[in-house]
Image (tube, rainbow, N blue to C red):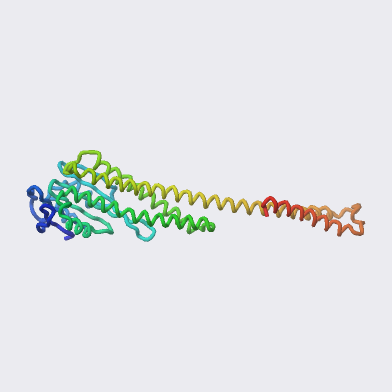
Length: 322
């Protein structure tokens, strides 16, 4: 069984464990609720919990699939959410999924592929009974806040990668591996943006629309989660633009280098054209060439070639071509 914890709470205090094999979950008295935590359950295990708490079959199917975009659905008086977690796997972003079933007196969480367990979160909440006494909607807020807070280390690591790429682009021309890394990081950022956009919509619906089993007093808490999602979204959007500018800067530097090389080659070609042209003239082998009879003609021509080449070299150096 993949049940991490199944506990019953009364006024924020742990009363005891819950049997998830019950045929039906009886409505609890006011001030009491149940929190079930599952980790990658199979169909039979999830069906047992679904039977006990009356979870909708379609919601169970979505919770079992994994790898879906965040969403919020209503099934009668129950609220069903899919939230996406994010963590770093080397230079790539790994994603997990947490499905949440929220009823009037229960909350069921189903985790898939998440690198961060809810054990520490549960322990922290149980150490503050006054907060936990708000009910399962407070637990839902805590889970959403826990997941969104996990985005910030990912963004921090991405920022360090992008800054390192910018420094490398400014110091030297990027090689093929560095260029591939830039585009790979950009792809990761685009995927992350897609997740964040939908997560922002889910948090926005929690704040701007009346939802079952969500107390009005909890709206400021969910508004804080929405603010955190938007902050992450804003930073990631800036990273994407920044990474695009790094690629463009590298391209401009490469074009500048190619332009410098082209100008240098053109300058040397112009300088070498002078002796080539003069040597070509005197290499035509005509019989009647008056300069051939000069005693010092050879030295005069060489001197002329040297003077013209020196003047051209000085001119190109002044223009910055050499």
